[in-house]
Length: 488
Image 1: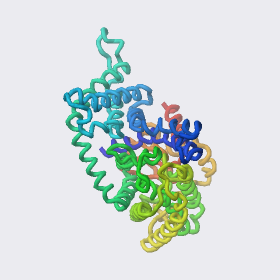
Image 2: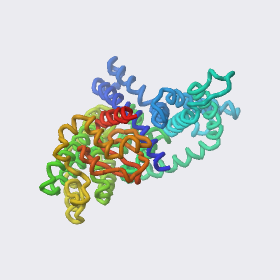
Image 3: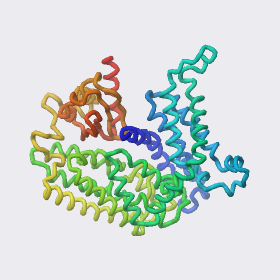
Image 4: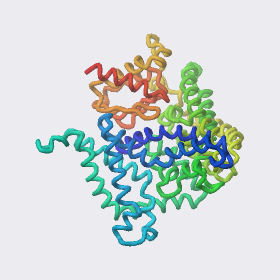
């Protein structure tokens, strides 16, 4: 079950990758016309409308992205199936449709059906589309139905399954919606404290890959909070909207970078250079783009207590920022790029305060990380035991520069460390990691894999390995895939 939930989280990274385009377009539009939000400028209006085409359809993107990500094969058919499922469910459960079934006025339809086009339904539609594809892509019906054999029958079966699902949701969705609403309201009604609780759990769930489920409640229009959408569209409440995003900026741009510097300073002298290359690359990714996984995975399993402190500090930062007159938002993550773009967003409030807040957060992170590492002798990067290296320097005959630039070389080492192509059951990748399930976990050579020069490695189970590459993970994954295909 855990692996399945993790795979769903990875699938969501595909549609999430579309959001930076919206962020850039929104940023340009609001910078051109900060007062009229497009009413005073044709170019601004064009950019803002183009951005809203993505933001307003996030649930639909989730349906397609989940279908593609959860399918057994990289094929266009699952995407079509996910779209079919989305259209079927949202049409059958629309307010107008419910009013027709029950012979009441649309204004009297329960509010749950007014929000049927949400992230949860998008993910569910994607799962139905992918499930039907995986089950029926090789279907072989009688000759008189031969035209609908194989992948051609997937969309048809998806439609029937989605219709049945809609019938079930007719009774279940109001209950599910009510539960989600109560959870969201219980956190939202706690104001800044609720934002802090969300921020802490957001970080704490990253090792399990389940943080996207929590994000769907607060960032998107699952239960009406829609912090991300309202921040950029101007439909929110000034001073409130952005509460569930603002506090991430000081942590990702400053806090984690300072924590990385503390880990570098506390590294053993003979390992400082190796630690520096790892931590510096992760720090750049965190500061500029808000992608924190390379840094977080470099120490979350080496020093889980330190990672827990990081989660708590994130929650505290979220609470403090929510109390202060500062609001920033992002379309991708809380890095410098989104911070600059959000200056002219409709719901932005004193975004410049992120700088002084970030400096304070950086000092706190540096002090706390240094204290924790020294007090508890934590095995952060560069401080591992000699017989239990989590970051082995590449051997002399395996050049570091080649391993970083030549992804075929890197992939070959990783593949060998995984026991070869014949030991792999399935493999894919997300924003920063190659995720692999192997047949025989005893064949995994962690030191061999780490000698490729990767930032980090973790084993969630004996057969489930995550190889942290960084933001250029696609190149390493593609190189490994070619090696696997060539070995067949």
